[in-house]
Length: 210
Image (cartoon, rainbow, N blue to C red; front, side):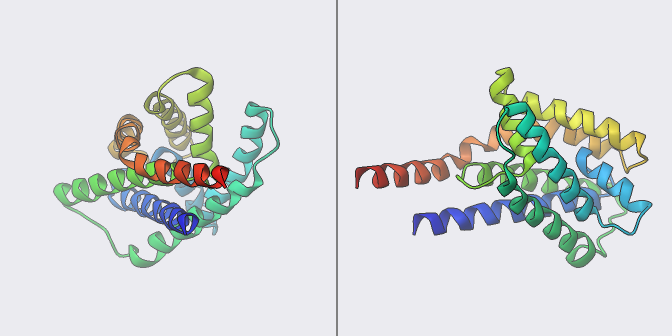
């Protein structure tokens, strides 16, 4: 039963973070750094944003394996596919006609989006299931550099924003805000998801006691 609840939290976290990313893109203030690369590439090809994201995550699986000097975590392709497909569902489906024109609506949609992204990431990372390669890379670098998750995420987002800009992606004020705010928001919301970790550790203790 515990694992079923954890699976629901895991899936919900992925869905909420995908919704958040889609809202950031739809706010018209600029896509998130990583998304700006995928969106920019999708402008010039028939390939969707989510598909480009899945391809990038597959490459990052190999990068993570090299950095950690471990076997590639192919199981992390599962959340990668969920993220890519659900992002496409939001962008090309339920949010397709969202096009805020006033600054206050753009700001509101962006604020909801970045908060949802941070909270979704924090909750799904607290479960014992495979992580999206980008989030796993953040955790790996957090351990190796002894820097906070916020600092590591900021550096990652900054590098991706520069790449997105060079590729002609929708980089704007929202992109800059994501670079400086998403990391701290994940750092802030991560403790809020601590009960999820306790649920997992309690299940492990119960299993070890048997």
